[in-house]
Image 1 (tube, helix red, strand yellow):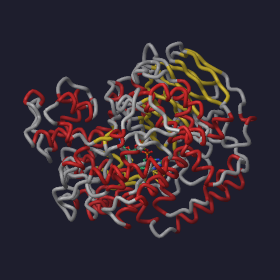
Image 2 (tube, helix red, strand yellow):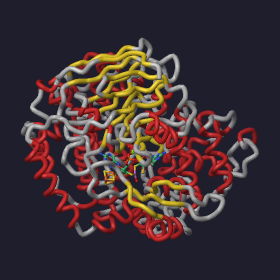
Image 3 (cartoon, helix red, strand yellow):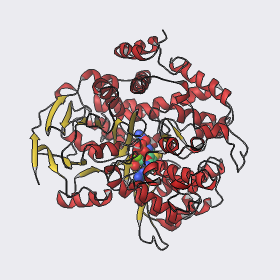
Image 4 (cartoon, protein in one colour):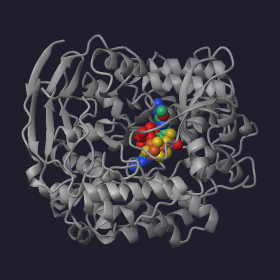
Length: 637
Ligand code: PTT
Ligand code: SF4
């Protein structure tokens, strides 16, 4: 293989007591240049890692208005001080960039051994700019970091690429890669790792593709500096013991997130027929029980996890028999009920295609559901039908459309590869009403016609509609489903601070806490053991608020203006009532939603348009944002 450039590692860990390794690996693909930089202490202490480090770098270094697909976009691959440590489920990594799908801040969190090995080589993050002349991969090994020719892998499907790279390098390397969908610049391309993990919904895989970066390959290097490893290991053992004895442990490792299908059906939030119904007549065919009893053949999951939730499943029925894929709730709901498809075999096939092409299952399911609804309602203009019979439940049409989207085939495929927001603009004819997104990111699998708090969570998520920052719906269902009271805004923000803050900057999986009830009190203890720093919850939450405000400032700077309406949930939830189930007839009330949004802004210290106030920015140590923002919008004191 062609060795373009190499760098030698130097020690940066002297700056920190542990957790942080002290260096950032910088790569300029246009110049074929690689170098080390120290991790700024100020960034580490005030933004910690993962999402925090990513947004600080993007704010500081990305020229406003940069085309996300241009060489100038900045790709950040960031671990956090706790990733790869004995903290339970610590094998997670953040990938971030300016999103080609939304035009704002985008990131994703995926399981990967690379998060630990990158630290083993002394880095907290890898920052990649430029565009290689021809396909390359970045390889980290004992020899240094090198760019290598990846032409032979270009065009190869993502899972096949992982197998091929492991064959060509060492079996033990960790691989982050993309498939042909992200290479061809489908706007919702994801990054795939460990064959079953994938992340970066807002098109972070697409940014890999735009840079001719096929993969990042990291040799196994598990050891990195921690402040008090013995204490971290003892805590890890204690937490693992708790998790293994948790009441829900067995159910969790049997079904993982697939437990949610039944829950969503019962609570009338299962996305069905492009978020029209909330319940699905054929739900039993796609339930967690069905998956477990008939399809699951192996437990899989992220590295370093004591409660692995991946459901490796195999299709049984022809013509899909033998296809293997990991099934998760979001994938099954968006490619199943949302498309009116009740066959798990067909869902396995669709999920497999999405993984191989490395395109996001949620956006894919939303795009196909959107086209199907337009088709059934007679709103898809003839010129866009492309000979497809796009009725809900038509498996062949869903598969064919997936291939066309993934290959950006001229016509409907190419239009939908832009995401539903842009597709609706192109199609016109009132299509906007059926485009289920926030800020251009397709909504993940919870219908919120009758769940205003979860609608607020989607609408204020810092990357566009994703549940990861605040899965508020569980609390809402328990405590007062249809209310629009202030407690809901408080609850959403509390979750955003923990899930969207702590777990995205530590970086680790939140599910030990969410699903099996591991006490949050463990986390400051892990933080102390691994980094040597004493942070309490006030400090953790302040950091989360800082990151949120900076992400909001980034969106404002990129858009060049800001409107309150950008924090609205999809129009359909206001306009078209749910059609089925116990909440049939319900839709969101716009003026009550507006009150809820005002509560949200008030608690955050943002003004009535969702712009952080000067006093808030100052309190969070974001004074440096003020001069730039005040040129774009009127700031409130
Ligand atoms: C996540 C989103 C999700 S969230 C799912 S299933 W889920 C989908 N998975 C996809 C997939 O698979 N293939 C594909 N081509 N596209 C996919 N898109 C969808 O992406 C994931 C788990 C899950 S499974 C969840 S809830 C939790 N998410 C976490 C998070 O966001 N942060 C965090 N600190 N911990 C989390 N733990 C859980 O991780 P995105 P993964 Mg994914 C095949 O990244 O962009 O955030 O989108 O990361 O390693 O696969 O684990 O019912
Ligand atoms: Fe990964 Fe599941 Fe373990 Fe979280 S609980 S780290 S998502 S396998």
